[in-house]
Length: 560
Ligand SMILES: Nc1ncnc2c1ncn2[C@@H]1O[C@H](COP(=O)(O)OP(=O)(O)O)[C@@H](O)[C@H]1O
Ligand SMILES: C[C@@](O)(CCOP(=O)(O)OP(=O)(O)O)CC(=O)O
View 1 (cartoon, rainbow, N blue to C red):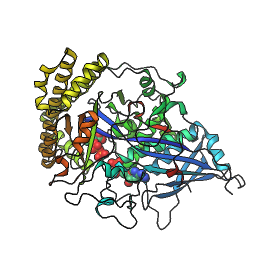
View 2: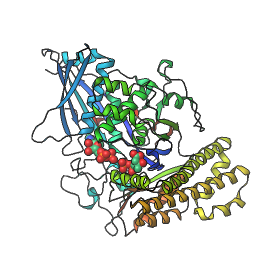
View 3: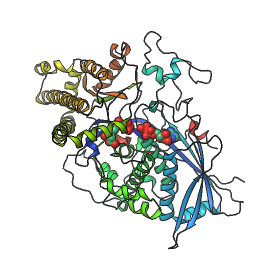
View 4: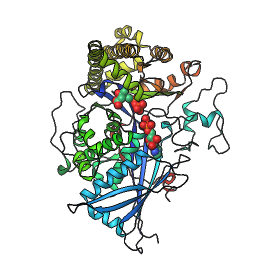
């Protein structure tokens, strides 16, 4: 009989956009600059205990990702005792004729219950004794998936009756915003059209975090708290981390945003445990070791990232068990050596994302680029070194902009306002209109960002041509070039691995964002089907994984 209900725990993790560092970030010596967005995957967990049942040595887990037609999975977690007397678990899917596999969810459950059996075995005993059911509901923000089908041909079961502009098939931000939150996809997970925000990394990270928090392995105070579900929700508290859960700060060679909260957060043991466990589960589930920038972003938000040494995870992936996994994910394991240097988009700059309704196969692009680099090591290294120095320059220029804003917000804002109404090619002429040195410096730095990012694009496209990979396909090039002529656009390019997934723009002021997405560039594009995404860069105070401290009826209504 169902009885005592535990409180519900909800953690949300953001999607990502790698604006600088595609391919290079696979190598530990090169950095990537990843920006998190305010579109998130939410994992809600609650435990239902069956107090009158006879104690058993297992409990069940039910996962409902209700936006998909095949989004339901059930597992049994079995408890056993190792030869050394320690407790361990195994997770077995309960299969029926309709069930599908979800490697990411299954792997997270295995990893997390190994961590719980190691760190708090009593919790596992408790779940078994009460024959508990751990019920999980997943909610994914609409931007992770193309919403075109809801406009093009609304089916009777579709939740939307809004039509796209019949003349050009353009869908506006306002139309997208009119869709219900956590819109049903009317699709299986396998067939859904992804927009490239990194759904699996956000899922793995939020699920790992919510389970570890729900079962008391990590503490609430390690998270920023999100008190409203609606877009533009504001954080009201970021509790200071307890000294016991902090590591000594490491020296970093770059100037990081100087917030002691952020230092604490990056070095916080709880978040490190969540990070390491999520990276491990993500690699194991996808059967390969990527750079991990997406998982890192899903936890820490926007930052400059250097990857961890893959050998550590590689060895534990061969025969994962409680012992090997707990060793790998331990926050004090110095071999888990990825680096996170917190940065944000400079003040007044905003992210615009546009989905290209096509999609690319990242793993095959990666293997071709790496094969080319192995075959032509001299030319490959030369191009990578060149790209890397320009990537680093963009990071440094961002930091300089933020410094100038801190020094003199008025002059900084005046310069941005001036540039926002002119295309970058005219910014040099605006210097004469500046009232002070700070404004002039800001304009020169914006010009440098614009030029440097274009040089990166040129080199990335060349690398694509040399390796036979469409890193920046010609159709994207013409779209990006048009964006770069638009007033107030500072950067534009293909994020991550490139290809036909999406383009990003960094623009000055919210008004440019609005004007650009509603401009002729996207409305009258005949070569590609382009759709803007609603999401923006994550808010500074809560751009990583967040504890959602409010009731979310849409999610709660899907608990079994
Ligand atoms: N909301 C979700 N609910 C359930 N599973 C999900 C969800 N989002 C992602 N996944 C899992 O992640 C897989 C997609 O991973 P992948 O193809 O690597 O895409 P991405 O690049 O978006 O991470 C899905 O097949 C599914 O197993
Ligand atoms: C090539 C890469 O450096 C970046 C790929 O970035 P994307 O953002 O394109 O990733 P997907 O979500 O897998 O499509 C590979 C890596 O870093 O793992």
